[in-house]
Image (cartoon, rainbow, N blue to C red; front, side, top):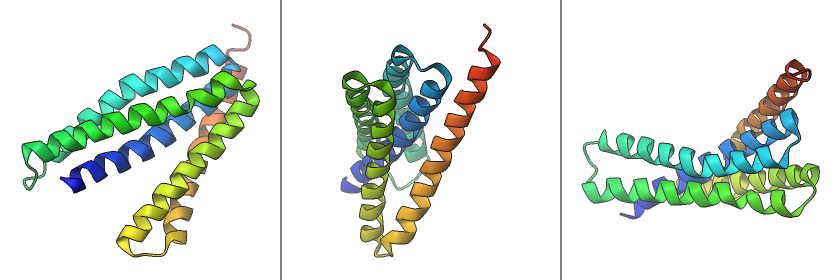
Length: 160
């Protein structure tokens, strides 16, 4: 049972952090709109958390060694973790100037990825620096790519 919950929480934390971070960076770069960023976060918190929970459910069902209880625990843990992880990004967006909130969100997201990576490496008894570096590199690629995509879309639709 613990493994099912750990699977869902780990997936929810990673996906909730990376997806939400990419979304808010891209939306900010493309629109500079607090409303767009807040709407995006709320959409991720609901639709993407449900979608990922279903994905986890199906993935766990595909494994013959999982009980129905383990499958539902992983599903629930994924949804709850991703939902609240995504919502955590609302705090800086709602209370700070938008540009500063985006910077703080990146710091928050990278901190979560670092802590999760450290915990995973420790559980697997491997060097945490390699795991942390790998996961932060992926996060940085997501942030940079979505920022560039937002900038590009802003230039295309600037006259609209």
